[in-house]
Length: 433
Image (cartoon, rainbow, N blue to C red; front, side):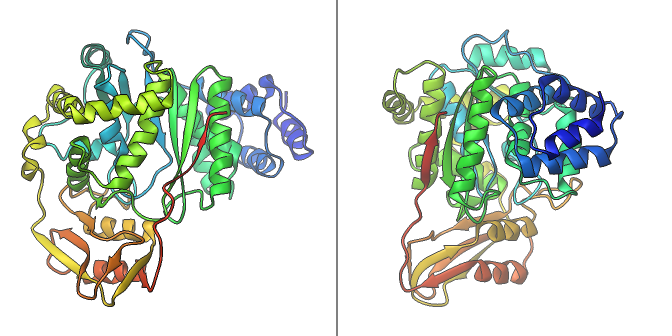
């Protein structure tokens, strides 16, 4: 078999066989196929697309390129959730204890964030003592006993995806649906869950800017999951403005605690219910999505979800008293209000630019080596569709430096006030096949 034959076949609109896809992924992972040939194939895939079967084969070839996590020692249906990323996306911190409180195992593998704010692990480390450095045996034991644990990502999962992703980044093939879908799904499948719920974002702060593109990606991932034996569903949700009100690690932990109490921002609560009911349904705990949502609301109202969060923090070395005393979370030295300059209605919030403003404060990483400041960030006091009067606070900046003129300027440039506007739709669609 020769790589050039695969390139020509795909260039001319042909369908690659399972053997050909395995040959290409194995050879590339071992360093036997050069970057320039893989770049040519990636470009051919970009223009010619792939069938559902090719996409599933590509995903599984990447899964098999490295280590996979075996969660078979964990009892019950293991359900995982993946978000395609956004600004102020606190859903994992809410969903994991919410679902675990219903006796559904949540074995979460998470990473650190590169970008606007930290990843799930960074956020959780805002709780003093919390750590993810636990053995696989401890991880399995915690999930079996308490239904919830978080461990750091292993470096040996899907090495083919890491190589291919780096190449796509410099060859103009990042936005290819089959390549994005197989990249995301290979990591989720290698992480060992039985069922996967996807939160596919759309809007200014998302990778997929239009609902149509987000739907194509969601359908591609759901089909891959279902074709390889993982029950998969997706929600298409809005990221034209930050989710919730908090952007920043300790601030998002506090917001997650408020949401588990039933006092969170309405959009964050709505999205957590939409994703949570799918997780409960796929785990086989409820015969309908409506019944699943009722169960979730129940564990918020009776306090079980909050208790599960405390238990989870304590099990991994964290101080559970922060749940009742959020003032124990890291606090920034300065709180600076950003007042509206005119009366009107908030008409636009450019989510990724607002995320960049939070990163400038130290809430996220510009490079892998950057240190995160867990205390800093932004709290959005107004969202799109909210009326505002001149002088009223749009945003509260939590900073550890006195001069934040650069951040204030960035925020003013990213928030537009008009005479009228209405709040955007939060959930555009549910994809089940």
